Amino acid sequence: MSAPLNRATAEDLLYCEAHLLDEGVADPAAWQAWLALYTEAATFHVPAWRDETTPTSDPQTELSLIWYHGRRNLEDRVWRATSGLSVASSPPARVVHLITNVRVDDAGAGIVCSTFTAHRYDRRADAAHVFFGRYRHRLVQIDGAWRIAAKTVWLLNDTIPTVLDFYHI
Image (cartoon, rainbow, N blue to C red; front, side, top):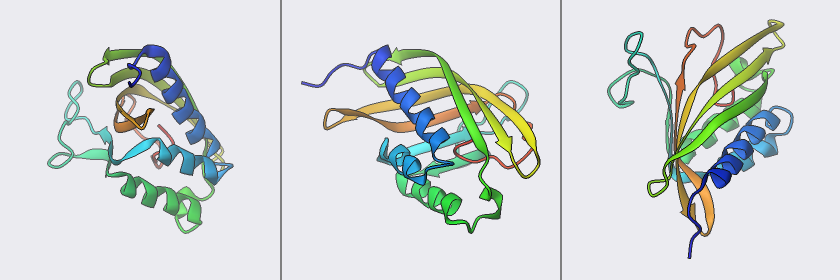
């Protein structure tokens, strides 16, 4: 019998995800552990804004800031970010995520919503930035463990002063 999704379980997974994203800058093995939190068919979507109040909704037909379909695409991005071959990722920015207001919106569907801030320090520019917004995760249980099947990030301050990558938000 699988355990039902509750807020404490959802918080543990979201906090673990944030920790692994933060640690991946210094320890690439953490980003591999982050990838393992995602299902094979997972999606990772950061929609753009159609206007001041309406985000885009269909990454297949509308502009997105980031869109990955399938964990394989996330794996490719992690490889590029850690390979030293990506000028935009070298040296990687230092980031710390803060997640709050975690709530299970639909336990049966595995829908978890939360808010976040991500503090980013760019050593090249000697500049700090704060990104903030809302997350919506769809979680599924596989072999008794909760995994991320979909993550949508609504970036509320989307005037991006620099490169935006998967671990910045």
